[in-house]
Length: 80
Image 1: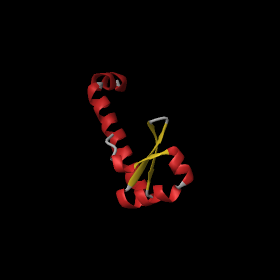
Image 2: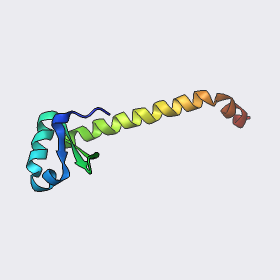
Image 3: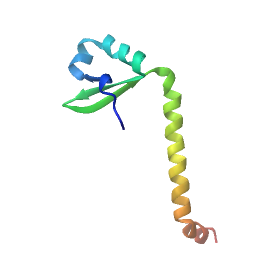
Image 4: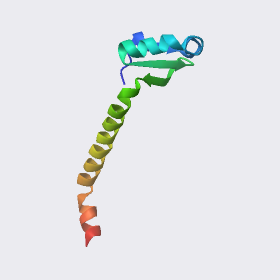
């Protein structure tokens, strides 16, 4: 995952100035909150929640289809 350096916020700043985090989300679409110098949380606008979920569902379906193709002979044997 690529992270825009403009959207990185330390957790201490997020605790003290959450309005800064919300402004970043409004401007860039998301913000990454760092804890112990590692990305820990991602904040994005509520209206993007369905889009994020749909993308995850598509990834799961693609992975499932790939596994089914790879193991097609096993499924055929089980169907007998």
